[in-house]
Length: 112
Image 1 (cartoon, rainbow, N blue to C red):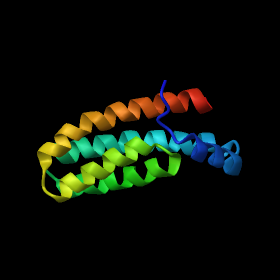
Image 2 (tube, rainbow, N blue to C red):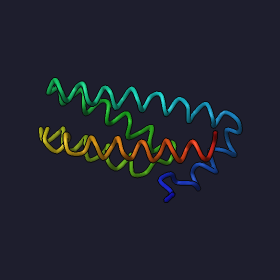
Image 3 (tube, rainbow, N blue to C red):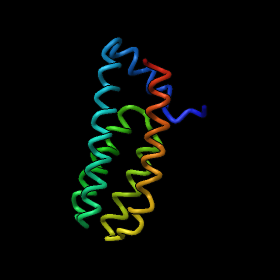
Image 4 (spheres, helix red, strand yellow):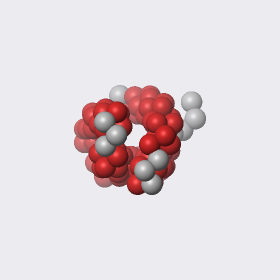
């Protein structure tokens, strides 16, 4: 499986946090599921500010755990939503979910 996590950052986190890294990743997983649902719901209601808020939060947490592509897709979603381009957000959402599945799978192999 290709790396979807910045392993250098993950190693730094592992050294700094020790066993607490598992808690960080579990928190990230739960938060990401919530944020994905929030983005979807906001999109269905055409509430682009809700999309922006959730995607921006997910962008930051993804950066913190080294999920680089997740961060990039969230950035694209934020920019598209700010531009009022709901169609672009609709197109990016499946990519975000697919990337989260990849990230989650790699986390499973790295820390579980």
